[in-house]
Length: 273
Figure 1 (cartoon, rainbow, N blue to C red):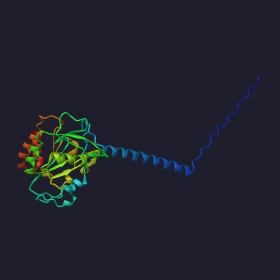
Figure 2 (cartoon, rainbow, N blue to C red):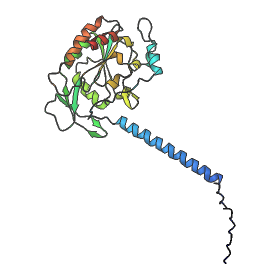
Figure 3 (tube, helix red, strand yellow):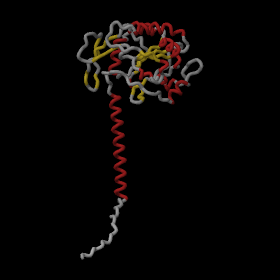
Figure 4 (cartoon, one colour):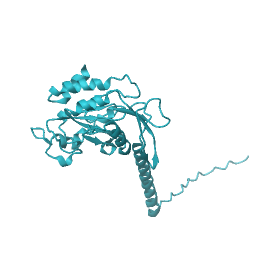
């Protein structure tokens, strides 16, 4: 007979884990932190590049989801006395009103008063401007919206007229020199006067030094007036329709709105019609 040999179980010996030295541990943490900072900086510069580059091939607007609460807006709204006079003119983007009794109309430029495009030349255009952008001269073929001259003439007689555009000054100033050769526009504001809110360019009317009860903005882009929607008339974008009647409607609106103490009430009535 063969005798069975009993095996005595042996305890498994677990290898000890090597603990990282304090120096290696610190290096690992520093590497993770630097990697996180690099990702954030890359994301920031990517966003800035998008803001600085105008997209002239728009297929629609992405509407801002919510209205931010700006401390500056509260300051500007409280900066007027009972007579509507600005108490802090140094905080404003615009100089004080020459005629305090006049209300202010802010007009957008592209797709509101004119439409422009680059080469090749379109079939119809009124004039060409050639600004130097990024060191290169670019041809912009500009078509004026029907009624633009009549609108400016009508508004200049009774209102302070301000063109507020998100376009670059080097381009927009040339266009306005041709559109408004008679200097009916009181002031011009360009992209550098806009604010960036959630990656969108916004025109903050509370920074103008004007009583918001006496202000209207006309723009085709709803993001432009996201901070003061009650003061805004959204106009249909103009491309090349020579039968367009939008500016004639505005002329009638501003003739009637003279009787309103608060222009926001006039805008509300106009939109509801």
